[in-house]
Structure formats: structure tokens, C-alpha cells
Image 1 (cartoon, rainbow, N blue to C red):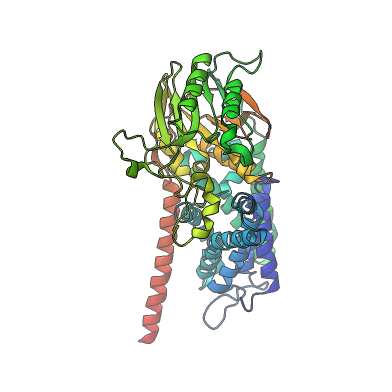
Image 2 (image 1 turned 135 degrees about the horizontal axis):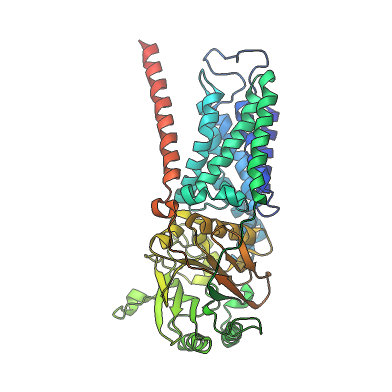
Length: 538
């Protein structure tokens, strides 16, 4: 951290603030085109204003920081971004984890400090790439590939790919169609290209600087203008009823509310008004709407009754237990699943999906023997936590193929595509965002679900406990939504889609390509440096 200019610290902090502004709230999508540029400038610094770039005795361009210094600048940017955009994590820890505010603040700080390591690594590797004769040119070229590679790492290593940069442009319909080919990572790559162009304009000699800056601004403006394009509405042919029950988390697991909750769900599932469809065809309840177990006869009777009365399929969230008939008590004790089930109009329970990607510290505690003090956060699921499912099940609702994913799973692009690849014609997301209070999380979560619709060219039907309940078309547009914190049922129209996108068929190929390019660049850089050291020794 020594010898880092104050200007560099300010630029890195500015970058963290700008990245926050890209997402809800306030969701200033145009900021994404230059949000990372200040961080690149902080690390790379300006070229000499008078002709050729100056270098030190080791051949490293002056004004470019060491990898260690680059790490700290990137780290600062990341800490600011996570602290501002994910403050709802503190709310969960304090309110539902029963933590003292001071303890929750410390845990939230550790959360931000941990995830900011990816920004720190970005800064370190950019500075590393800039050391050498060609300096900032290599770093600028590498930056988009490196950013995407680290988003891939955040998805797979940390398991928290929240607000990937490409999601900031979800309202830019022409631009985000890139995601059908390369996933959200392709959109992130395009955004970083423009950011590097802005940064490069400040690294050029003065007589070229203005031209490059104007060209970058024009490119960003033309790309952002895509958000003004409004394609016509898509044809539909099916209707679903999305139930938003709005049960406070504080009372949700009170067993005394069991009967009242069931009655409310039944009433909401009935036709909510003269303008609604008497038989929507599909009724969707949110994620585990109350302490209902799939084996509870009262729950089964009520859901079966709803399906029969509406002459519709019902997709409901509930708590599952092992389904094996021959399982012993010892084998099943403490095993619970966050599940979704499909019930036919004639009362048959025809399908079940157990959530595969569980929420760490919410649905299970990693390394429980070490982190025993965090068990309070997962009190919803008992002492052992949930057990993860093993299969991406596609439901068959009278010929309609439904791919159902539950809450947190929606932020993993490569996992949701498996439903479409397995034949799902429409995606269904059931969730409960009431845990996260009145912060910015529900809007952020909805936008990530919208990106999954775009990547796979599928309608998404989203039913939540208290919002945001919505229907999303294959362009990622919200065609109809319900206001938050209201008890209601929302009738929405949708269509079945059978065509698969390139992304659905081939997954995160573009993200892996970026990973390979970054690893190859690092290998070549290290090899040549090693050979140079050996040559000097001779």
C-alpha cells in the first residue's frame, strides 16, 4: 500500500461507486460503459505527455504500479462495490440470524473483504501485464478477458455471481441478445471493451487523447441507445396464475398460522376477479410458502383441492423429505429438501424437484463444526440444514415442459440453461425475497432472472412471497408484474418455446475461452520472464 498516489486511491474509489450505480437502485445502466475505466487509470497511470513513454532502470513504464499496489487499488474498488450493492446481507444477518448489530457488521465486512479479492486480483494482474516494454497496451488488451475470467471464477469458486456486470444492460434489448450466443459473460466483455477504450484515451499522448475519448463516448452512446428500441409484443397462447401471498417472515414459520395460510393460498388461487381466467391452466405458488411438508396430509389435501377446483395444474413450493419408500428412520432423520412439486387437475402428484444449489449460510452451513456460531442464520432448516438435490427435473404439465428453479439458483447462468437443454419450454422461478427487507435486492434479483430468460430464449413465470412477482418474455422484458408487499394473484400470458439458443446448447463456452486466454497470457509472460532471468544469469 506504500507509495500509491492519492489520485490513484481516489480513482479506485470512484470506480467502486460507479459500479454500484449500474444496478438497482438506481440502475443507471449507461454508467456501466465507464465504471471500470477509473480503476484501470488508477493502476496504469498516464503516459508521458512528451513523446515516448519513460521507463525505469528495469524497463517498467513509469507511472504504472506494481502488482501489489494494483491489488490494493482493485481491492478498494471491490469493497466499496460489495458494501454498497449488497447491504441487504447485513439485514439478513442481523434480523434473521439473530446477531447483535456489531457482530452482524463484522460478518458483513468479512463478506465484502472476501469477495473483493476478485477485484484485487483484477488489479494485480492488470498491473502485472503492464510491466514491460509495451506496458499499458498489453494490459488494456487483456482487461476484458481478465474481467470475464474472474466473473467465471466468482461463479464457480465463491458461488456468488451476484450482479455480473453484463446484467446492468438487461434493458438494452438489442445489445443483450449477445447473451443468447455467449451468455451474460459476452455482455460483460462488451462493456469492458468500451471501458478499456475510455481508459486508453487517457493513456495516449495529448494530441491523440481527445480523438480517442470522443470515439469512445460515441460508441458508448450508440450502444446505450439500444435501450430505446422496443420490439413488438410476442404472441402468447397460455395463461398462468402467479400467487403472491405476502406472509411476513416473522410469522411464516409459526405453526399456528398453518390453516390460515392454506386458506389464503386457496382463495388466491381461485379466480381473483371478473377479468381473470376461470381456469388458467397453471397456478404457481411461491417458494415454501409456509411450514408445509410434502408428506403433510393437510397440505396435500389443500393443494389437490385447489387443482381440482381450478381444473388447472398447480406448481407449489414446500419442504421435502426423502422419497424412498424403503428408507429407514436413521437414513431420513434430519434430511430436508427445498422442493417444488407439480399436481395435476385430477389430483395426481406427478413431479418433484429438489433444489440443487443451496444458499450457503442460509440453507446450509459450510464447515459446520468450525462455523457453529452461524447456525442461527439457518434456523429455518433445522439443525442439519437442507440437503441438496441431484437432478434438474423438467415437469410435464399436460404437454407443457416446465423447468423450475428456486430462488438463489437464478443467479447461476450455466445451471439454469440445463433446464432448457433438457427440454423445458418455459421456465418457472419460485422465490421468497422477503428475507432481504426493503433494500435493493429484489430489483437486482429480478434483473438476473430476466437475463436467464434472454440467454435461453424462454418465458419465465416468477412467483414470490412478497415481490417481485412477474412474467418475463424471451427478450427479458417484464410483460406484467405485481406491486410488492401486497397479497394478490397475477394472471399472466405466456408462450411455449422449443428452439434452443447457442448458449443453451453450448453453455459458458465464451467464459471458458476468456479463462484460457488469460491463463495462456500469464503462462507466456511468466515463461519469457523466467527465460530472461536465465539468460541474464549466463
